[in-house]
Image 1: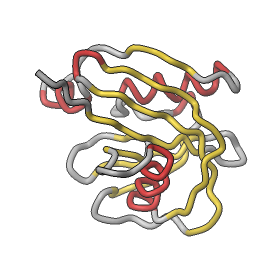
Image 2 (image 1 turned 45 degrees about the horizontal axis):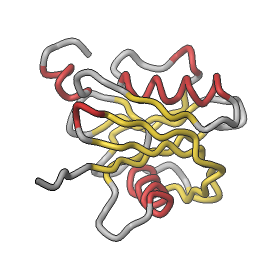
Image 3 (image 1 turned 180 degrees about the vertical axis):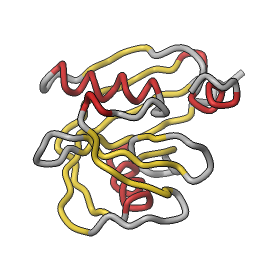
Image 4 (image 1 turned 90 degrees about the horizontal axis):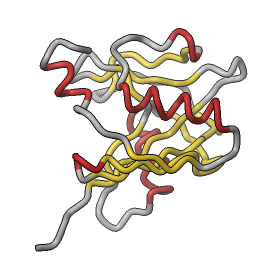
Length: 148
């Protein structure tokens, strides 16, 4: 039987105060990095640029690959890219009802725990590419259980 993986791509974007850009989703009360699922035929680096644009209306470019995360229990691989904004104005849309920059110590409690871990990895590991296994319930599962 052939195994199917979901591939996620997320951009970690910092401003001049070293704060991280997060989006508040429209469908759940959940903050997350701009990103999502790779589309068929798309490379991870193309996907993250598209996702950042769709969720923020900002044009970004990739600085580097920051991490590759294997969510074994979800059959998902996630690419985390450090990105920078090259143009555009933050614009709310059907995917995000709020978009803000947060310092590492002020990240909202209702932020995806796996994404908080990826943000911290970027801050703590410098230019090293992180390769890590992430386990546990998804953010949506935690929200439905009232734990996030």
